[in-house]
Image (cartoon, rainbow, N blue to C red; front, side):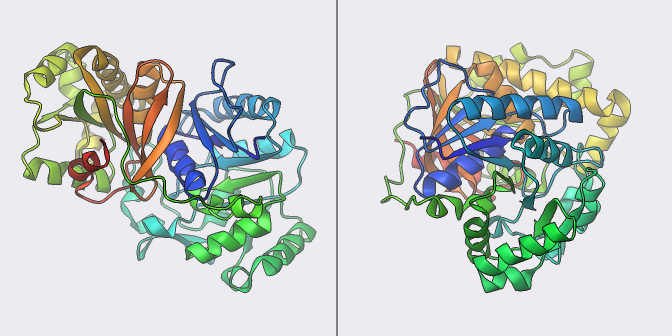
Length: 419
């Protein structure tokens, strides 16, 4: 029976959540988009639906999320988890607030929580403020995100601008006291008229407390970290380690990177320093027709099989701003996504079966182009990033990485976990 139906607003976030639930003992199937009858969900404790809704217009994000929720309910889910980024990526229009409202209405619920904390990746919430490492979100590199610049670290304020529902706070002191204190804080918040509460968390222990306190809520929202305590609260215990390596289909390897996050830029720099062959996509040259998917695919084919070639559009904030000024904010991103999708679509025909894709939007575009319907979760490469293997269709090993995740040597060391 499906214990938990999950809706993620991008693909890498879905994979991050799938890894968390699998590590805590659940049998997890991740689908690319709303699951259809061709995907067998019968042995899943949790199903994670990966959408591409983070930066869509709010009405589209709500419609996609409700379609996923309906499919999950038909498959037997009684509880729902709405997963978004641990840096709360959104704008004042949404989409975290509008989707949360819609899921509360869908489940006829009057209360939920929001907690993006993920201490393993240096995301913590204290006094309702989101920290990235030792700095406030508004002082981190996220302040310059090309699509969702985050310039306010106070999540009560951020979420309050996205929803007509009253937003409150469950503070560190209550979380520190344990599940009963958190449930009492929930009751006080509801009595005060709050429909959503931001919950403080600065450690994994806090996340487990929150999961234990929230397991009976029809809707829980947050980053993957807050799902940490849910499986045990549902009576599911972690399984013995299934092994640190994953069998992978034979074939060549490649890396596609579209994220402009500081972490991904650091990983690209490390790969270049290690001698990785690389092709940098210039969006202005792409717009002028001077760069094409066919040209890049020919370049990939010319590289030796000793190192996985890297194709990337990642750039620093100043370069991104210049491209957006000339091409338009949306057009610049869409051009890159379409190009990388065209490249990804052609790679399996050219003998590539092992791919790393960096960036949530980029990963969504690549997986859609590859026609992937579902994924089985494999070993953890870095916190929040596993290897996966496709279910049905073309047999591929995929690592779908959020732009912000992973150490500098990610593109170099990830391959060590494949057999």
